[in-house]
Length: 339
Image (cartoon, rainbow, N blue to C red; front, top):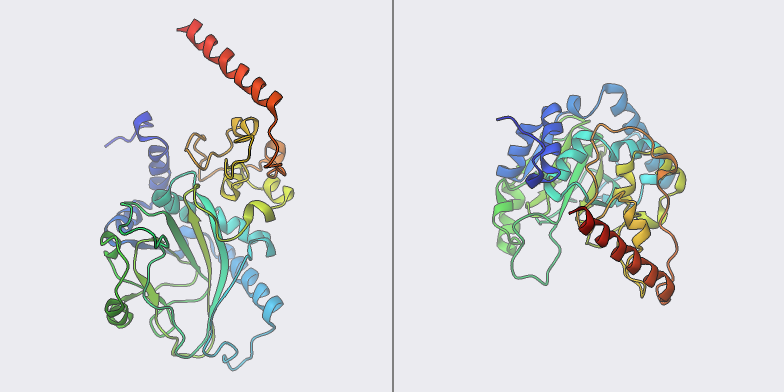
C-alpha cells in the first residue's frame, strides 16, 4: 500500500513513513501485538555513538558515587536509579533525540509527547530486583484508557540476560488494561520473559505492559539509561521545562523544545494561555496543532525558540485580552470575506 500524507491520519502518516525508512515497521508490530520491542544496536547508532553514551554514563556514576571497585561488588544488593542526568553531558541530548527511540515512542504516545524522566540506572549482584508492575499510575481510574498515557525507552549500556539482572516482560499484558494482582506479581516474577540483548540496544514499551526484572547473579554492574515520555496534558516527573537552558534549546532541533514543553499551555493563570507564544506553533502539547517534526531533523533551532517566560498567574491584563479578542474578530472577518 502506498502511504500518503492523508490529512485524516494527522502526523501518523509522516511518522510511519520515517519509521519505514529506519526499517522499524516490525518493531511497530511488536509493540502493538506484544507490548514491547527491542531495537538492535546497529539501528540505534554506529559503534562510536555507543562508546560515547557508555563513557558519558560512566562519568556520571563516577562523579556522583565514586569509582566502582574492581571486584564488581560496589553495587551489591543495589537497584539504583539516579535522577535528572540529562544536563550532565550533551551526549544525552543526542540520545534523547535518537530517531529510532523517539520515533517508536511517538508511535505510542503521539508526536507532541513531552519528556517526563531521563535517568540512569545501575544494578549490582544480589537479590535486588524490580517487582512486576505497569507504569500506568492513575490509581483513581477503575479501568485503563485503550491507549498508553506514557512510554519508555531503556538504552542498554551493558549486555542484558536473565543472569545479568535484565528487565522482563509479560508479552501481551498491555491488552489486559489492568494492574497485576498480588498473586500475578508473584507468579510472573519468575515466569516473565527476560530481555536478551546486546549493549547499545533500545527496549521500548508503553505504560500498560507488565514488566519487572530478574536479580543479578554475576558480579559487576548492569547499566542503562531510562527515558520516559508522556502525553502533553500530564504532569512530568522531572522539571525539564524549568531546568532546560537557552543554550540547550538553541543547539538542538525544534522538536527538542517540544519535549521540554517550554511552549505548553499549562498551567493557566488569570490571563488564560499565553496566546502569543502558542501562536508560534513550536509545540502544542495539549492539542496536537503543531507541525510534524522529522525524526531526521538535526538543524539547531537557534533563536527560533526560547525558555518559558515567568508568568504572573494572579494578574489579569484586560488591555491585552481586549487586543487579542479584537485580533480574533478581524481574522474571522477576513476569512469570511475570502469565502
